[in-house]
Length: 178
Image 1: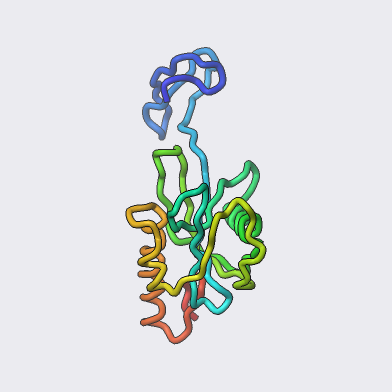
Image 2: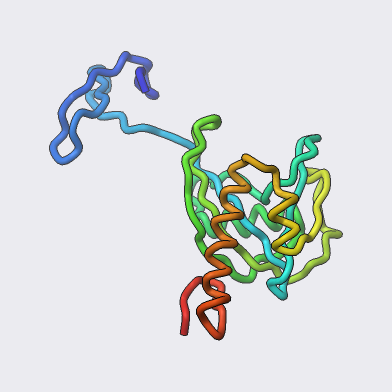
């Protein structure tokens, strides 16, 4: 960040105790920490946990995960439930954090979750989504857009799930064993 987001003055680096050199606006007399967007994406599971939902949007023939921006004052889990409801007409019953990654292209911190919905009926899909389908985990691994952040999130989660499936008698969706 080179300029103050409030007044446009060129920022200078100034030492801040316990933080180091931070951009400083001499006009506002304020430190300016980096700003970025926050969004969620989610690996949506069918109610039985056996299938994964992939969607296509914006006229592209690319299978991706349900995703959307977190609104001001909104928690990530609430944003996840809202986005799944808005785009697919489905209600999230459980969710579990997977991982996060900064996506430079849109200056966005992506927070990825796995979630379970209450129905596998795709009849509530809105026009915001071009197409959607359920896949087995193996099919989803192949169908997701390769090289995408969505693929990275999906593969990370599937490895975690496989670990819990192999090592515990009961698999708790939040990753905690009994």
